[in-house]
Image (cartoon, rainbow, N blue to C red):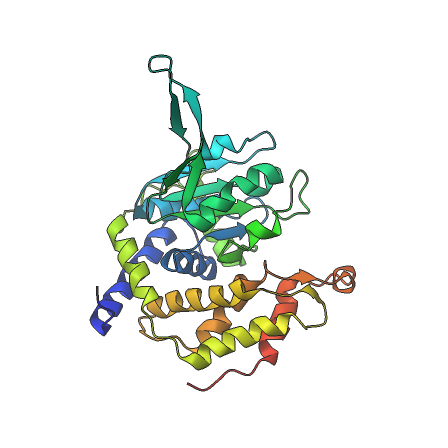
Length: 324
């Protein structure tokens, strides 16, 4: 599909419809929903963090139902093994040959629920999957279906029984999205929805209708990849990332993959807004979720109780946006 304005407008309408279908299950959290959709359109992976009970898993389930694609879920636990995710080989008693049993990773959208409940060895099973879109089992390289997206949820590290994700794996998530406590009116609406004519405490997905096919998702990703990005906008993204490497309060700055994530996600945001070009505001809008997991606070900042998002906000404000 060509990236002309009519196709861009049609794509934006489809993504607006996807927002609406997700909203039938998840009350509010519009910024969070937009960031997760942007990750899908940018062909990336997303890490969603928040305390239990704020709708992390519900958001992923609603999005999977609104997409006509295959969906799998793995509940991460301390005893989960890498082979429980990727698969394993067994000896066929008839042919006396090894037969590969594919794991739940062979799907289009994988929910890695409470990913930081499993130790680093198990978490690292996703490294090859997220970077190369393939799995190596018993010497065989098996490609994953496309589109493919990992949607991982995690509780804050202060929660008992959690393990921090390795930096190499964190860097493979395009965005780290934070779900915070909702405003009072949204919380009232959520409670009303759960307690009206319904048993149990689960928000229903019955009203969520599929609105995007596998082919449509791939087309949207191709359209996003063709968005026009002025060289000054790219320089702006790089300037923000480079500023994190010298900023007081940050012991570890973002690498080049951070600037790439900014541009990739900004293209998706432009498409969602019905434009065929990226603006500096798109970069600024996505800077915190694209960089918060790629930087490390200094000991002094940690002792002062500062958060990565707050420090990054100051970094972004310090870099002058270009006029394009």
